[in-house]
Each structure stands twice: as C-alpha cells, then as structure tokens.
Picture 1 (cartoon, rainbow, N blue to C red):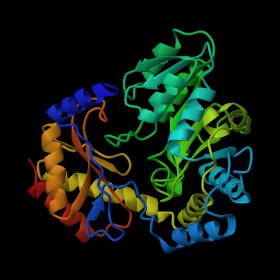
Picture 2: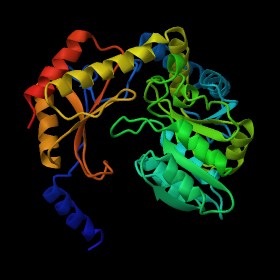
Picture 3: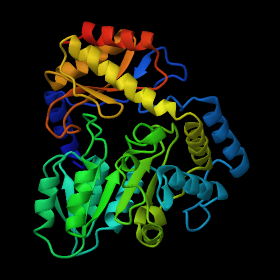
Picture 4: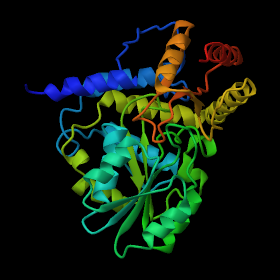
Length: 375
C-alpha cells in the first residue's frame, strides 16, 4: 500500500513517547507563556502591530513574487539597511524565514571542494544547509574551538565553520572569539546563526557577534530571525556587501522563494526601532532568565545556566517530560517540551523562555507551578 511505512513509523513514535500534536491557541489565551520565543514581549506591542497593519495597507497582503522579480519593496530595503546598521554589519539580506536564511548562507558559501565544519549542537536548519551544500561536512564536538582547529587543519582549500551563537536546546552560548580565532588561523570563514542572540545579547540587544567584537568583520557572516526578539516573521543574512551580493546571485532560497510579506517586514522594522529606543529590554530578558534558573536550581531541579533567554530543565524521560508539560498547562503555565530527535544528546527537557515583559509575580508563579508538577 502506498505510504504504508507511515503507519509503522507512527507506531514506533507512540511506543517511544515521541508523538507530536498541534494545539491551536486562542487569540487571548489565559495561560502564562514561557514557551514562545517572544523574548522582548514585542509580538503584541501596539507599535509593532501598527507597523504590520500600516505595511499591509500600503503594500498589500503579499510580496507578490520573488525578491528578484516583484517581491522587493522599498520597505524591504529599509529594513535591510537598518538591520545591518543596528547589528554592526556592512549589509543585510531579508528572507521569508530564518530557516531559509540559514539554508542560503550555508549552501551558497560552501561550494564543491570546500569543507564545512559544523558544531554537533547546531540547529536543524544549519544541519540541513550542510546536507544540501556541495562541500564536505565534518561534525565536531560541541562548542570546542580546538576541535574546529583540528578539523580545519585536515583540509586544503575553501572552508567555513558553522555554529549557532546561542544553542536553542540548552541556551548555552558558543565561544565565538575562540571559533573566529581558529578560523583565522586557517583562512576559513565563520557563519553563525544568531537567532537566539539578537535582541538579548550585545549592547542594547545588538547580538552575539557584536558582543564578541566580530560584527562587521570581512570573514564573519551572521544569520538572524525576525520571529523571536523582534516578534514578527522572516530572517536575514548579515555580512560583507560582497557576500550579500553573492547570495542575491547564488542562494536558491532567495532566488526562487516569494519575498517576505510586507506586514512582517513592517512589524520587524517597528520592533527594531523600538528596541533601539528601549535597549534595556535586552538586559531585562537576561535578568529574567537568570532569576528563573536561580529559583529552579534552588528548588532542586537540574537546569542549565542560561547565557541568553533560554532556560533548560532536565526531565527523567520523554514520557515524563510530556506529562510534566501537560501538568504545567493544566495549572495555567505554557512551557516548551523538547524530546528526541529535537535534542542532540537524547535527554528530554522542559524549555523555558524568559521574556522581558514578565513581572516578578509571574516569574514566581511559574516557578511554583514547575516545581509543584515535577515528575
């Protein structure tokens, strides 16, 4: 029977406790949200919503075509200029998603005969970029500049290292200065995904590359998403102008994809300007994350110390992680639940996201629920 193997895989997922389901949320949910990636609390901010609405009224509902045909509006280029300037890079290129931006950066910068050195903890979008690239990929130990240095030393020719800046599962930060140093010893480029750093790390939320002194370097390229700290949707690649020009001509997820909807571009631009006026939001997100970690570990839970806004709490098993998250939901708290294959080490977790707009009362309530429902 066609697709009969799907039933076998579904049964295997059920046995392993790894079935995933969609849960549509209402417009006005009563749950306290520690699951979304809205780190700065901007997704519903009046200025951001107004930016989306104004863009839709001006430019219409959709981009109407690929960026190279009709999908580039003046709004897109305005967003690119301001995003590059804010993050400290020479140029930026906006994509329909952060996933598409990562696929573009990795595939277009790793031609045939090149070496890609990829961190073992990288996000799925970077991994998929490595799989699609024409270069050869070597996976190295997590957050280990020496492992990167050793891998680069085995190759002659073009090479690029690929890493998240903040890893989405545990919320730990990559040693960017060490990675850049290893790359420069071998003349390799460095591509970093700052999805979880933009808006949280660096001066006023300018991102992890900016904090590490790497923004604007001619051998560093960063990708970002507009759907986390900026509360919108879409992604971008930041880097030297010649790299961005190369992507325009060579990146398939740019050339053949419909441009980002104007409403999303307008919302992201409004959020970026708001962050520029209120840089304290970045520090507050980190403060909330640190506070959550301190209270949870003081209560005896095993949580990873956060470097940005993600707090990871270990669960005994996939089944118990799912039940823990469900019990939290029943108690009015929405938390993330990460299980294999989303976690590289096979350890299931609750994934909590700190938000800059959380009050001390809400933080305390969240801790009480998590501790009170522990397996």
